[in-house]
Amino acid sequence: MLVGVPKEIKDNEFRVGMTPAAVAELVHHGHGAMVEKGAGVGSGSPDEEYARAGAELVDGPSEIFARAEMIVKVKEPLAKERKLLRRGQILFTYLHLAPDLAQTQDLIASGATCIAYETVTDPQGHLPLLTPMSEVAGRLAPQVGAHSLEKAQGGRGVLLGGVPGVAAANVLILGGGVSGTHAATIAVGMGASVTVVDRSHEALRRLSAQFGSALRTVYSTRASIADLVRHADLVIGAVLLPGAAAPKLITRAMLKTMRPGAVIVDVAIDQGGCCETSRPTTHSDPTYVVDGIVHYCVANMPGAVARTSTFALNHATLPFTLAIADKGWRRALLDDPHLRAGLNVHDGKVTCEPVAAAHGLKWVSAESLLS
Image 1 (spheres, one colour):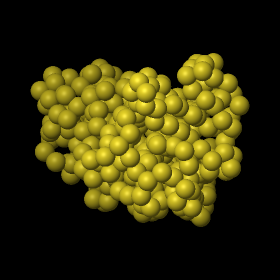
Image 2 (cartoon, rainbow, N blue to C red):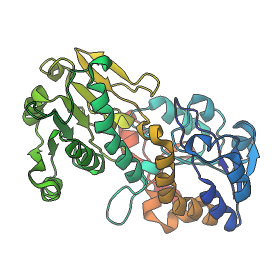
Image 3 (cartoon, rainbow, N blue to C red):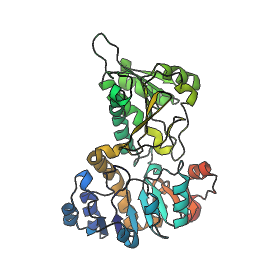
Image 4 (tube, helix red, strand yellow):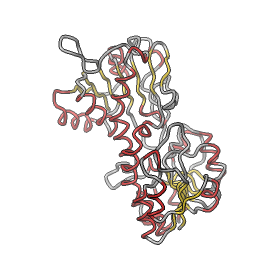
């Protein structure tokens, strides 16, 4: 199979779909690789390393989309990339379709087979291709939140860890999954006063056992969230419903009860965000203010630490990339129900039920298509 790796074009996105080491594995399996010149520079992999790995280097994305049988990316294809997709082509990347009707419609029209990293599962019911970026985003959230709390950034002027004689900042984390747990790790390490809310008793018990008295756990209800946000200096939204739009846990009315200059870091923005006033932002313009509350809603947070993120992502995606290339997408999905869960759109049909529900579209199961 000929696999194409275009350069990411999202604002300040420096990750790349395949590292030179991953390309070398692909070539070792007897496949071909096309890499757009400069695609890996932002993550520390120059063109020379791809050439040594056996890749064909090409100028611009047009040739890659025209010739490659499978496109391997990091972020969802933007509008001008979606125009280059063609029927029968495989797209393997993050898609996050539930909050993005325009992208969903374009992928349907393309006729391509679109497999989303974020809905691939494992035998334990986890999301192995989403996990590494959730870990990165979770660890980044207190860091960017602390910066946004600085007065020069429009924040309250509060130091996350405080100093002797002055209280630490109150950090509220919505969701105790992968992102929430990693956010808690960093926030606790920075000396903040941390509270995590979740509806999973298992998650709350795990957090309590892991952190002990270093953080507080609270069962998630509308009332508990409304009470906690009033006293929070930093709120980190880390909720996830696999494949579906994130629930709006923070309402516009709640913002009016918060302290002026408090910060919301909405890690869930890829799935539409968990705050009613959240909208996607970019690394070049990361924040905006609503009712005196600073919102940080960068949709590709891990792109800020592109080298760490790229290698972490490739370690997770490479076995699936090889399976698709070795077997073809149909046999790979038939053989692996967990990879099959990643199929979101195929030949003009939506095969991810939460995506279809979010947009009021007809859903066709992947199993029925494959059979």
